[in-house]
Image 1 (cartoon, rainbow, N blue to C red):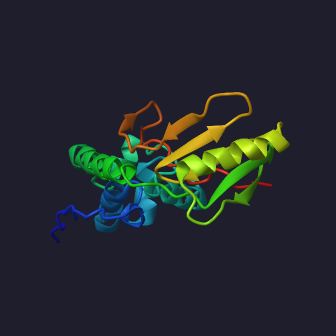
Image 2: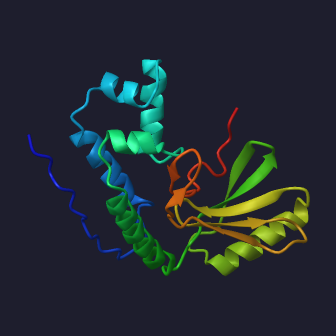
Length: 195
């Protein structure tokens, strides 16, 4: 049985909706997992897990790039690190293109307390500059609340009363750590209440 080679599908990023964070490196990881001839139990054993349910959960997190991926797992599914690095480079190019689009925020996130957030609507067609004015006006009325404008997978702007705006960019990266490989943050869970 021969393994199908992975082909990178170059996508035209014409608008912000065309962009998906980490599209290529996640597609390559899924391709490797799908074409792996080992059974679930063989993969579990190779990775050193005894508990099947724990391995299934971890494997889902690894393929979704939600936690660092152990090198032994990448070897088990036949992932070529050079191809994975090339996929990340393509993802970075798409990220850079997506970052050039004009951002029109619909809402901002208000942090009520630790791990508790609420969305606050902005006027229709609001520009980034208008949104910043709205947030600063909101903070004048509510000085103890911090706010955030978020575009998951792209960037986030954090507002604290009396401080400069802090920007976080979610550019896909290829990061080798002691735990394995990771691809950076994507900002997906930002502003979600966890109880």
